[in-house]
Every structure is written in structure tokens, then in C-alpha cells.
Length: 402
Image (tube, rainbow, N blue to C red; front, side):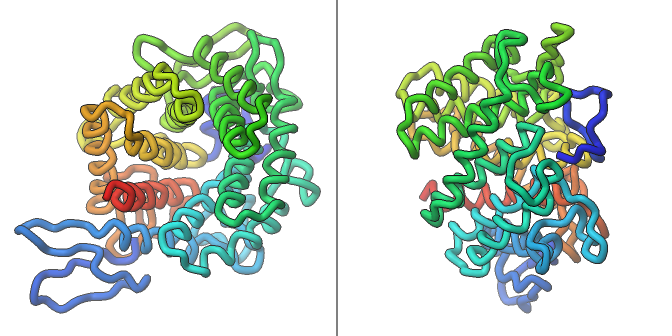
């Protein structure tokens, strides 16, 4: 993330910096079309509106591309009004913007999305403030982890070796962040903040290691995934509730007990991945418990709408979408207790429904930090991408459950 926004105030939290028209189709009424060529986002049946989630995902992702993708520089800009003189858009959001594009490609097979893959691969080198234009490594280990996870997805979609090679190089870099200070764990940043063993630097690292093992079958990768995961369970995990705390300061021996949605998401994703690799029920239980905490605890949700709470602008705007990306994978796990699967599905659907019905400007699809409130005019890449991730997650769920 951007060095100019790294402060010593509440360091572990990483809260650093600070759709199209809805198409309503009544039976017998005139069909309307939005500026993004949306058709039948809503259909009328049984006296109720139902949402075509694939169409909703289309309009959301199209808005991401048309409003945030810089056609010449080949990266995502920081706000939807940032094209003339783009500010530093941040490195880690680039990974999640491309993840949405990958989602859309997998859903549609549309070449307009796959054409962006190689462009992005080169374009984001100009965004990376650490070792700019040299490689993809970043002094903030979490930034490197997110880029590497997206590289693995690109490899899975394309089979092109450059993406896997880059992910492996980033993984070698990330492993240098592990120290015995604080009993282990990966530090947040290489030069100054190695004592901060934040969940944001360890959850994605463990997930990356597990996913690399899925591809390479390299036992060392699995050993690393288990090592990081066990450190998190021993240090930032609450076994009574399933909560994942924000991080541990090994220099002061202080635990930051703030709970943020993306930290819950990466931990449950790793637990789920380890369950699929090992078949050990304990991992699935961990994933379920952490997911349940995230959707039921009052510190995590907007109780009035029963959606994930507003976690602020800047980096915080992206957190909820990350949780939803991994949450939906857990819901689709065949071995998940049906009672929890139903409970989790209800929460996913309500979040998507509230965002699409209440949280989007009817004249222009722009997602803000609060999923129950419309945003108008300007929004940030982080919060907009987060909303797109939810739309793609819901469309993916509807497709996969059939």
C-alpha cells in the first residue's frame, strides 16, 4: 500500500487512506435500458421482484472497467474521476480489481475481460512504489500477497507460466517476512514494522501457501501454510468466538483486538483450503466458527440492515468484498453443516439484496462504503471494487448451486 499513508496511529488496523440505472421490468410495461446495456436486471414474478444476479454482476463489473480502468496506463485509478492526472491508486487494490475482472471472465467467457489480463500484468509495475518498474515485490508483505494470489488465479485461468512464476517469486519474498519475534508470524513491512505481526500479513500468506501447494504439491508450501495458520490460531484467534483479531505487536506484546471483515475472510479461506487438502474436520470447524462470528457479532454488522458494517473509506472500503469472496466458497462446501449453509446463504443474499436495492445510485452504478446507502458522484476504487465483488460472488453462488 502507499507509503505516504503509513502512520504510527493504530498501525495494525491498516485503515490508512481514507449502479448504472436499475432496470425495472413490469409485465407488459416498456423495457428500459441503462447506460451499461443492462437488460432484465429485475424480473417480475409471483407478485415480487426478483433480481437477475448475473445481469447485476454484468452492470457492476462493467462500471468498474468503464469508470476505473485506465485504458492507456492499464491499471485501475483511485477514484472514478481520476483519469486526467491519476493519483497513486495503491498497489493492493489492483489485485482485487483484477479479481473482479477474472470473475466476470469466468462467468461470461467474454474476451473483453481476458484482453485485460496481460495489460494489467505490465501496467501494475508502474503502481508499485517499492522497486518501481523492476518487479512485483513490495516492502509491505500483505501487498505482495494479494498480488500473488491474483497471479495464481490468472495462471489458473490462462495456464500461462509467467503468472505462476511471478507468484512463486513473490512467495519467496514473502517468506523472508517471517521472524521468531513474537513466536513467529510474518511482519507487516520489511524496513520498519517487522514487529507488527498483523493478520492482514499472515492470513493471505497462509492462503497463498496452501493454494501454491494445490498447484505444485510441494510439501514445503503446505508446511508453511500450516505454520502460519497455527501461529494465527495461537496468537490472534479467539477460540471461544472464532474472531480473528487485527494483529499482535511483538515489540510491546500487545494484541490489537479490533475485528475487521477481511481478516475473518482470509482466515476462514485458509481453514477451508486446509480442510480440502487434509480432510481434517477441525479446519472446517474453524472456518465455520469464524464465518459465524463475522455475520452475527454486533461489532461486525450493521444490525439495522443485517449486512456487514461500514468499515470506512480508503483501504477499509475494500474489506467487506474480500470477506464475501471467501465466504461464498465456504457456503458452497458440500460438507458444511446444512443448518450453517442455509444461515450463511441467507446472509449472503441479504447483503447482495440490500446493496443492489438500497445501496446503488439509480442513475450511475457507484458503490460506497455503506452497502445500505447510495453514493453519488465520486467513489473510491476500494469501496467500488468491494461492491462489485459482492455482486460477482452472488452471481457465482446462483450459478454453482444449480
